[in-house]
Length: 448
Image 1 (cartoon, one colour):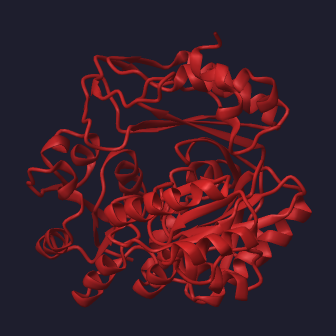
Image 2 (image 1 turned 180 degrees about the vertical axis):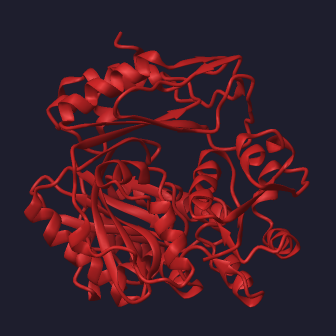
């Protein structure tokens, strides 16, 4: 096991990683910029390492500065969390060159999975179903339009690199195709430095379902699925599990294991799918890192996924086998983003007062506390409140009660929106697709 790990992240995920490191008897060092010098992760780690930059994001994106920090503090590994450099193959490679372990997949796996076109091909070969799409990047507008027509409108134009919903555009009609293509290429270039895009069949009225996987480079297992269809700007705000029947879970689970083992995957990964109205699954992408919503799986399996990721990165084999994975009850996570619940605009600021809920079956992952000054330069995620109960109906009631108990004074949050969703009939009856918020506009107006 590692002796000392540098955590190259901030916020609630940095704190979550520190807790797993502590439980494993490993020292933690957290990097930070000026805005995070008084944050909970920095205060609770064994050591903080200051990377001063004028741009707050740069403290967490400067590869050479972070590699130097790892060497200076004597870290034998770096945990990237999610976001920032967590999927950056160059970062993983630089650490490898310095003899420092990247807690995540190999640079080769990151390169493969970071290219959605190559990832689709690899997963298709492993027997995972994929939607109709172009096999190569699109360059010529006229030729692309012809291909889109053959696939059939509506289509989705997607960036070959990156994620987070950036560089994705649904095109419903031929007349809109050319402008949408240029828009996606421009966004992909500015966000990822790569203007390659491809065309994919658009799966309408779909459910977004993802499978949690962990591999040790030789063997892989899955820990079930999460349902993540309630989204804004292609980013999830409520996740829950389990969702599928035992038969569906076994079928798709065996395929994602084959996909992970086919590329010799090491670490935590999430295989993301869309399921259409006929119940057919289509592969979207693999997120090669810990997910924001890993908590849902932890609550229904009882396992510490973050610790598992650290253990396999240290060179140990998988700590459990597939037949040891059992599911108990139902868990739902609400992402408490500091955003206006009607406009969804970010609402950073000082938390003048803060009270988080508790009680049976309630878990809160947060870096927020009374007096915390939430910067406006980072993601708006402030906390995750997760409920667990024997049934979905009970988990909904527990989560609603926990949200009612939560006190946040100083910033807006999505709590009013979450509470409306939890009481909405389609949500209660599981009639949910990725256009849920668009098809329920009254939820964003406070029910007016």
